[in-house]
Image (cartoon, rainbow over all chains, first blue to last red; front, side, top):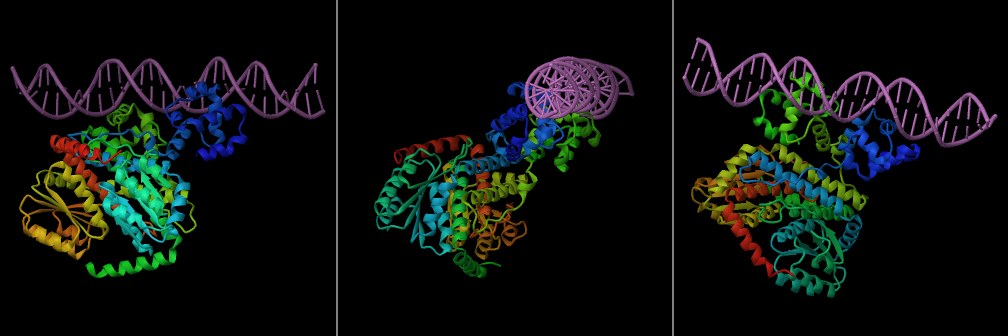
Length: 277
Length: 277
DNA sequence: CCGGTTTGGTAGTAATACTACAACAGAGGG
DNA sequence: CCCTCTGTTGTAGTATTACTACCAAACCGG
């Protein structure tokens, strides 16, 4: 939609173009404004706004607002609802799921494709991959291990800080460490990353804030963004976001090593058959 | 959005409910209809439609249309996009995240609030909770353990089928087992559930298909729905969905045991302080 | 300098969303 | 059984809002 406006920008008259750039600047605002309000803010008049909508091939302002709303990413406006003590199960489900869904949407926005590209390049060529995490992030590390070992790359997950630092010490250049930390300020993880770098390994940090010690200690930083809802015992949405980042990496590497991946996935699946009905 | 309507359905007056069901049936149509047209089609009147919008917490019909439009998935976006070999990192991110996001949306639709209610009731009163999972689902079980032990209920995660079946045998009435299985047909899990039931424990199954041996063996069935994208080494989206289901349960129980939960969460956080910068 | 064309705004109209209020139905008490 | 009271629903009216007809500049070639 916004792309469509940008595309037609050249064919518009001067005043319409002012409307267009306003829409491109604050698309969210436009949804809750009336024709005349938009006209005011752009220093134009009502009919100009209408003509702008027509120029896009729509019937009028109403239709324009609807179309715009449809193509804008939903999560922005949707208010951050807190789960409360007397919530019905249905309300609870909705609130938790939308919070998690929003975390995904926001992370998708924040995640830097260039950094992901660098991470994929390092992982693809890695001689060995180690995943480090503590506490809740330990689960994510193990999940990553589960996903990567099928791709034919020697790897492991370490969830004990002593093991992490010892293992980091014996890594070689070309090896990769992926450290997961929600808080981004775990002393143990930072220490292990320093040791790993000292050994010549490439370090990747999956964190929730751009500026944090773990990110600073990593060569490649993958950042998730989340706002947690109250009464979640601990970071939940961020875990979902981190897992999705791992998913991206796993799928990315799988695609770049397609033959090996397909073969190993098949082997793993066949091995499981006898465990099922 | 539609979930919100469904949730509030019971609190609505009869005529408003007619409007609600029309919206649920043809949400796309509503976007291009006026108040009176909606009133006509539902056999009600203008103010009723407005009142319906107000009941949802919105200011009026206009805002309702905008919100609805925002939350309705744009037609082209809902297509299930496969990640392909030559995808740029940006495309990869978008595809994996939207697939996961869709899994959440679909699970939110499918998940039965009544069953969740029953699960919460059982968990809240549980003398002891055990989480069982194997392979990838083992991560989910451990994650659940991480979230529940802070709530002041004795619990553990078991990811070894021998430990599971032995532990299940010594459970007591009032204890709860939560079994996570993506395939839903793991022999080991089904066996453990039978043993747990035999011991008098309440069994909850978190699965991806309604009709599967694990669901059949559980007292309470929580169902996630997912369509996996190709080249994901293994069920990824379903893991996200299962984790979210666990989140719902954890938040639900935390809210019902607010005092204990708040106290323990505080203790746990303070204990972590010295591990951070 | 002047018609014709393009562009932008004013004022008016039709529609739409919204509101005040009255009619009605059903529950509960005399 | 009637009567009141509460809550629900529709009617009629009002105020916005979107949209249109029309007119006034600005622009441009002849």
